Image (cartoon, rainbow, N blue to C red):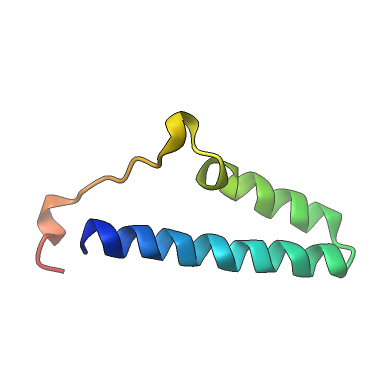
Length: 62
């Protein structure tokens, strides 16, 4: 996976999380909303302004 593909995957994931958060809010499910928001807080607001991605050398051909 290239850096660009990884960035796009993260962007797509965050878009889906945002949609899910809106759905949970609309359904009046505050505990679920809070849990999901907490899970992705670092992704949405990374410390240092970026998300560190780990490279797994054994998966370089994937």
